[in-house]
Length: 277
Image (tube, rainbow, N blue to C red; front, top):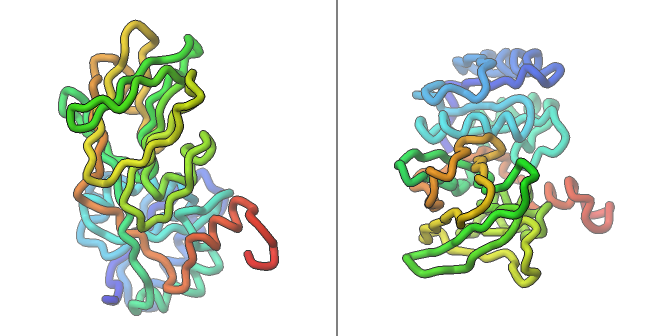
């Protein structure tokens, strides 16, 4: 792998010690001859990582999600330093980042290409998500009806609290809590999981990465809210039908060469025998 010449640190200042951690890591980078910038804006401006080799998100998984647009625009790799609770994406602790940063700068790292969802409204407005697109009734006014089709052919009509469309990366997030499957990060797939469906036979459907999924809002019913990676973007029935597909660009996640995805899953989800975690 090529050596790292420039780094942008994206800092979540709501996390205690995050700014200090970023400045400490920037000092290590400087000793290695790397030019670095520390930014505290969230989400990161879309042009913030242009001509940068690496963006280091200091905070947690949410902080890392906040650099998605900038990373997609620039093609920069992203590394996550976890100061939060989970750390499925931000897999480095502060101590590990400090210890490993010189080796990473010298090219001893691995890049995994994570698929990204593109959510487009009927008006042509698009938003990108690394984890998921969620269509949900959030005002407590009852179930919603959502009609799903692919290639002009109906899949099903769902009478439910909502639908989750998740990438393999996001399969361990809301999708998992709603009863959806864990999908390996290198699998080419979109998982569609209904939230509390009225029909018990409605279960997760797995689509391949080439599928364009259309979702229409059935009338009458409450207006669904569309959130992408946990942030609300659209709250009007006039946005439907929407289409959900896999974006052409991928999110480049930097990890240690000895990183194990399922070691993280075992640890964070408290799976199995503690002796093998």
